[in-house]
Length: 493
Image (cartoon, helix red, strand yellow):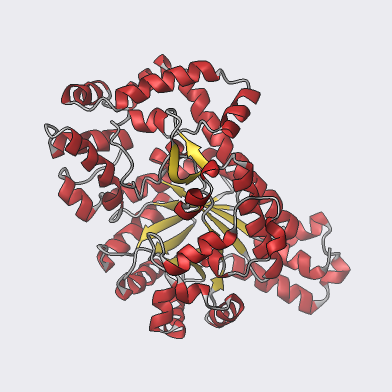
């Protein structure tokens, strides 16, 4: 390994000078080379800085002026930037995709012309990454690579065989199964293609690798209402041929699991007030959920299996990335610990999968997403009033917030939940693994909301911070408030 490679590894892994000597990576005589020593020491200082980043929208920054936007990020103490859809700006080298049915141009063309929840990305896709990277670097920003493995309506539409399959045999309208070999090959090769042609990339961020029938943030029109908590406990599973085969190879009793999940599913779609009350009256807290699980013990095996599918996918990415360059950081975006397990995301295994975990809890925005399935339940069962629906929701997730659907949609949940979720995440991941708190910067968040969220994340023990701006038209003063609050707390200089 060259000295350059040694130095990069030292920087990434925050290895002390003493440890360098113990490992014998740089001989004591070599370390008398003052230039090399200074490089190592300076690198150590840089790595000692808090991870402070932003999830931003390139097209908004482009239209404002990249230098102006980058300078604002710099002044806020931000050192890392992840643009929504950045994976689609890189060139496609066709030879990488020979062993998958998925054509990478399908998603790229969709993002360019139609766009997704985060808008179109025409400026981003038509830009040159290397040029943007160099410009960002002038402002002390590390521009890196985010990819979203799994959710793609255009790909699923073109290749239905890649989709998650529910207990009824229906295929998802946009969620791809991470156990599907075509899905794995496509995303692995996309990552390899990008990294091998852009060697300056220092971080690969995996955006919500998970397993469910639909994206809980989107909740498309074709999704039927399903009663809580039955939906979360059993329904969002995959019974495609690859999941079934993998589960059987692991020794799971698929016949019994199918029967259990089918029964639970039928209860969840029995939409009347009596059935709703049965759930709210008998599942009022953690002990009741445990009681339910004990009576349906096979669910534990199935929930663990679902997590193993997600884990296997990420381990494949890790092996690939580290083989290309072991100094590249792998980060993973997870939803809040209170419900991440419903998507096959376990904080407790992150230390084996990635270098850092980014917890996404946008407390002012979460209501606008989570209210969608609640509204569908209420529409199907008009007798349910807002308060009893919201009280059940908060009991199940351990959140606090407003008791009307309208307020929940507009205001989200209380900021104290940021503290609790960061605390849970830190305890779950264990020592030596960083948790980066992803915080809301979009409307309806105000500068005061951003400040409060930063304080709660800091109090919860966050190792770093990301400001989320992907939902469009985030107030610029929120970025300023983010940096000011971090400085007040002594997290940045």
